Amino acid sequence: MSMTAYEMARVMEQLDTAPDKIMFGKVLNELGSQSAERIQSAAKQVPIAVLRDMVYQFQQVIESRKEEQLDVLAKEIAAQGISVEQLKAYLANN
Image (tube, rainbow, N blue to C red; front, side):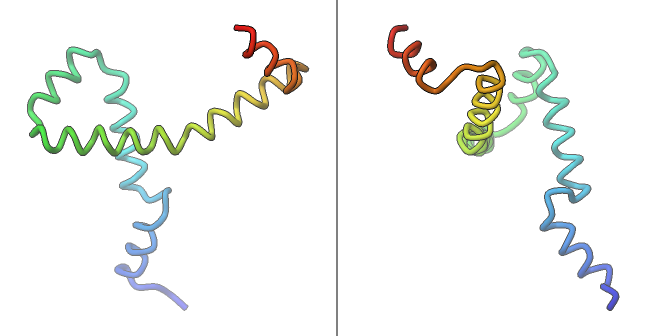
């Protein structure tokens, strides 16, 4: 069963690997590598309501990705042979 171009476009839209999402991710990554001055200068051209919405969306993504970071840190700590108890003791004392 073959899909029409429209059906294929709808499927691609739903995938995180859709070309437009990949390209947008690359644009955001490039924006992140710019200087603060350049980012602020570009942001001044965007309406405040849009900026607020963007900040809100970024905060939502950051919050949802905290678990990812915890997993990475937990694996690194475990690889170094540090136990949960040792970490708790260290955090309690510092």
